[in-house]
Amino acid sequence: MSDPTRPKGPKIIAVTNQKGGVGKTTTTINLGAALAEIGKHVLLVDLDPQGNASTGLGIDAEQRDVTSYELLTGEAELQDAIQKTEVDRLWIIPANTDLSSADIELFSNEKRSFLLHDALRQVAIDGWKFDYVLIDCPPSLNLLTVNAMVAAHSVLVPLQSEFFALEGLSQLMLSVREVRQTANTSLRIEGVVMTMYDSRNNLSQMVEKDARDNLGDLVFDTVIPRNVRVSEAPSYALPVLEYDSNSRGSQAYRAMAKELVKRNTKVKETVGA
Ligand code: ADP
Ligand code: MG
Image 1 (cartoon, helix red, strand yellow):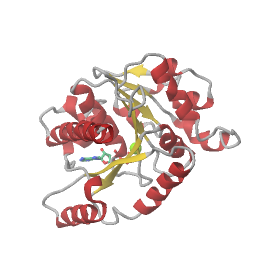
Image 2 (image 1 turned 180 degrees about the horizontal axis):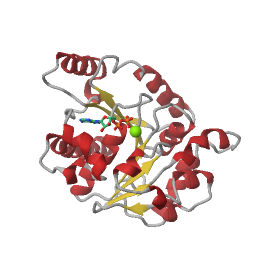
Image 3 (image 1 turned 90 degrees about the vertical axis):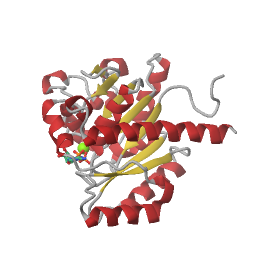
Image 4 (image 1 turned 120 degrees about the vertical axis):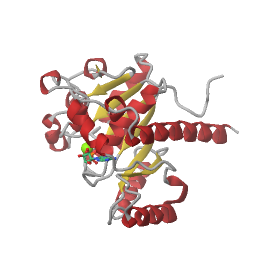
């Protein structure tokens, strides 16, 4: 029997944190690849004008005629924006610097916060069989990030295991609450994942403890270690799982994917009970 608690179509997750360099893009690519590896069909949406997720998956600049920008402005249809990657079951809507002007250009559009939401609705209608859509957000709480939060079922927050990691989180949560009160009442927090964790460093341990004390179960059990293979992989245009399958980074993202799927199943059972 189909699950009445879940809307038809994929689970849409916005990977967001207004700080730059905390592991949003790395998590989007590698969590996506890890979900694909266990048989899920995954669509990544690059919503950052820097286009790092697109580059990291080998989508060259000349392959970006149709990007998330054209999707948001209505100049392109969803099926024309989606591209296959080298990784089985992993697809992407790329981005380039065109997107940097979207904030201003779209401001006068009445539906400005719903553009991604409306564009992605086709994912179900067109019969795409995606299980997950992961949106890689820019390092800002701008209109692009709001579009991601309005389109999403949940928000996933990578937290760098560094001093000040938790700073800015209350601002992010405020944005989530604002979106929840207006455009997307069912938006949930998927969780917080510690990234670039160094177990030999006291600071990493302190930040993790702080996060778990403050955020409890929201923090994923899985912690993503700082691992040089993770940072090397994008220059080979591959997820770390393909670049060095046995690396600690690969293992961590596999564990995270399993944890995510398990959590989602648990939520469904609780809600359905
Ligand atoms: P964001 O998208 O939040 O700006 P990125 O995912 O681009 O952050 O990560 C910032 C930098 O940190 C990148 O150079 C990336 O390769 C590196 N990085 C991210 N996660 C790890 C990790 N687990 N181990 C080592 N380097 C990492
Ligand atoms: Mg990024």
